[in-house]
Length: 430
Image (cartoon, rainbow, N blue to C red; front, side):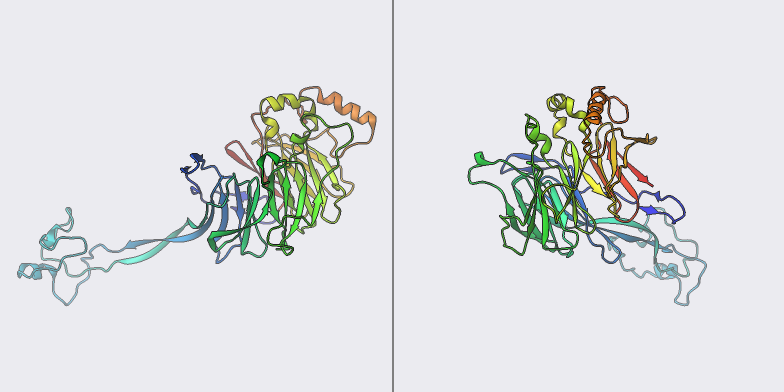
C-alpha cells in the first residue's frame, strides 16, 4: 500500500496477505497441480473493495479484498453500581423460583454455575448491564468470489482483463478462452492453434493481452517470435488474425539457438494501446500496431550473453521467461535480467537512455555500456564483442544465472517500479 504526499518519496506499508491456491491433484490425468501463482491481474474496484484475478497452472480465482470492521462485545459484565426497581436477583433465587436457562447451558444446572469463577455478592445484584457491540479497528479480509476451473488442458500462462470490466481471457499453450467474470462454469474458446495431428505443431502461445481501450481487440504472442492482433468482431473463433507482427530473420544468422531465443515470453500494450512491448530472451522490442513491417525500436538486453548461449542451454537458463513493462507515460520500458538486475530504456524518439539497476537494498546505478539500439558502425560492433568476452555482465559483475529477476511491474500513474527477486519485493521510485 502506497501512502505519501507529493513533496516526498512514497512510503509502503504492509497491507495484507492470503493464500490464493492450494496444492491439488488431477486424478484423471494423474497430475499434481502446484499452488504457485503464475499471474495476478487487478480488476475494476467497486465500493472501495479490491478485486483481483489470480491463477496457477489450471485454476483461476476471483478475489475480493475488503476492509471489515472488527466488532467486539463490550460492557457485558454485571454492574453492581446501578439499582433497579424490579427487585434483586438474589431474592428471586432465594424464594425458590426456577430461573430460565441461558443460551448454551443445561436447564437442570443451577444458575450459580454459569461460570466457574462467578459468585453472587451478599444481598444479590441490583441490576444487569446489557451487552453492547462496538466497532474497533478495521481488518482486511480476502474472500474468493469465483473459481474458474476445468477449461485448460495445458498450463495457463496468461490472464488479462478486458476494458469493459465484464470479461477476461485466459491462455495456455494452444488455446485462448474468453470468460465472463460473473459466470464461472462456462467459457468460450476464441483462439485454437492445436493442429489435428500434434506432430504438425510448430509453435505455441506464450502470452496474451487485451487492448487497454478497445474491448474487441487482443494480441497474443508465439514461440516463433510473432505477435498476432485479432478482432473479436470478425468471427466467434478467431482462426485468422487482423495483423501479424514479426521481424524478418537476417540472412545467414540462423543457428541452433535462433528459434529458442526468438520465443516471446511476454507482451504488454502501452497505456493508449498504440504500442506493444514484447520481450524475447535477447531483446525488448517496441511495435506500432499501425506498422507491421517491423519493430519501431529494439533494445538489447542480453546481447552480452550471446557468446555463452551454449552454457545457458546446458543449464536451462535460456528457457527463462522474463516479463516486461512500460511506464504510464510510455517514455520508458523495463525488463529483468540475471544477477537480480533490471534494465530501463528510454523509448522516446532519439533517446539513448539505458540504465541497469540491481534489485537489492543497495542498488548499483550504472549506465549500461551496451547500446540500447543496434549500432550500424562496424567499429562499435567490434568493441561490443570484445567487452562481451570478458565474462561479466553489463555492470562489470560476474555472471550469476541463479539469481534472476523475472517479474516486475510499473505503476500505471506514478514513476515507480515493483521488482520481485527471490523471496523479496523491491520498490523503486524516481
